[in-house]
Length: 447
Ligand code: EPU
Image: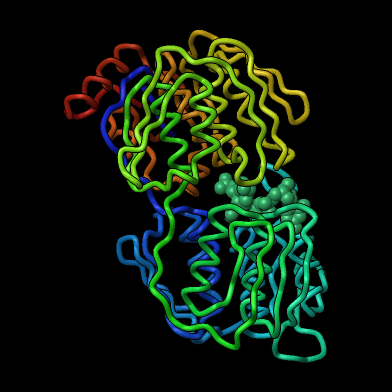
C-alpha cells in the first residue's frame, strides 16, 4: 500500500526512464536476431521482468546489468510461449511475429482481455494470414505456421482497420524476415513503433516510413547483432508534467523527447500551465495558481494518448469549470473515476465520456488502483489532496512505472510504501510521519 501526505510542494529535476512500451516490443524483437543484442535504457519494471521470463522460456539467454540487457536469442529452444507467463503480460503476444518469421511456426496463447477492455488480436492474426501464415485458434492458443511448409513468410499489402500499435509492431517484425515487400497501410505512428523500426534497422532490416501511416518493409534473409538504446518514456514524462502542475510546482524533466509530448503540452498550456524546453532533451513545467477546464479526446498518435487520460483527469478535477474527456481508444478505461470520486472529485461517466466539474479541493482517502494508469492518476490526486491518501493494489503501478515513488520523493513529495490495511492513521501519527519523512528520523506510530 502507498501512503501519500498531500499538498507538499515539489521542486528539482527528475530523469525519465526508458519507455515501457518500446522496451517490451524491442525485447520481443530480439527473437528475430540469430546473434546477441544489447539493449540500453531499459526501465526496471515488473512487465520487463515478465517479458524476460517469456524469452527465457523460449530458450533465450538474458542478463541484466543496470539498465542494460544482454540478450542472446541465437538458440531459440522452442516456438511455444507458456500460458502462465503470457496470461500475466498482454505484450507477450508480440513474440508471435518474430517466432513465426524466424522459425516458421509459433504457438502463443491468446492473452485475453484486461482491465481496460477486450483487446482482441484479430488485426495481428489477419495480417499474418495475408503474409502466408496458416493460423488456427484452438483451446485458447494461436497456432501459426508458414503455409505450404515454406520457411519464410511472404510480403503482402496489408490495410489495418484501425491503426493498432500492437498489430503494426507484430506485422512489422514478421515482415523484416519475409520474402519480398510488405506495405502496412493505416499503420500506427506512435514513437514506440518508430523505436521498434529503428531497432530492427539497426539489426539490418529494411524499413521505410515508420512514423507515417504507411510503412514499407523489404524482407531480408537474416538480421545481425546490435547495440540499441530505448527512447524515453513519454507517458512517464507526461505523468511528471502533471505532477508539477497539480502541486503548483516548477519541476524539470531530464532525458525526454519533447516532440513526443506535443499533445500533452498543448493541453497543459490550454489549462494555463506552461512547458518550456531548457535543452533539446529537457522540459520544465511552469505551474499556475489555478487551471482552466479543457476538453480531451484520446486518439492514436499524434493525438492525445489514452495512457495519459487517467493521469490528466486528476488535474481536470481541480480546474475551474467543466471538462469533457472522450476515451476513443479503449472501451473500459474509466475505472479510476469511482476512486477519484471517493476523494471528492465531481465526475459523471456516460459510456466513454467523462464530464468533470472542477472542485476547489480533493480530500485524501483510501482508494484502490484498478490498472496501471489509474494508479498514476490516484498518486497525482493524492499529491494534491488535503490529508492522507492510501492506495492499494500497487502491483499495477509496479508493472509500468520505474520507481515512481522514489522519483517523487526525490522531488520532495511525502509518500511511502507501508504494509497493512488502508485504514486512516491517527492524525498525530500522520504529523509525526510527515516530519520524520522530512527530517529523516525513524518512523513511529504508523501501522
Ligand atoms: N484492436 C483491435 N484488434 C486488434 C488490435 C487492437 O480491435 O487486433 C483495438 C483494441 O482493442 C483497442 C484499439 O484497437 O481498442 C487500440 O489498441 P492497440 O492495438 O493500438 O493497443 P495495444 O497495442 O494493445 C499499446 C500499448 C498500450 C497503449 C495502446 C494505445 C503496449 C504494450 N501497450 O497497446 O499501453 O494504451 O498501445 O496507445 O505497447 C499502457 O501502457 O498502460 C498501455 C495500455
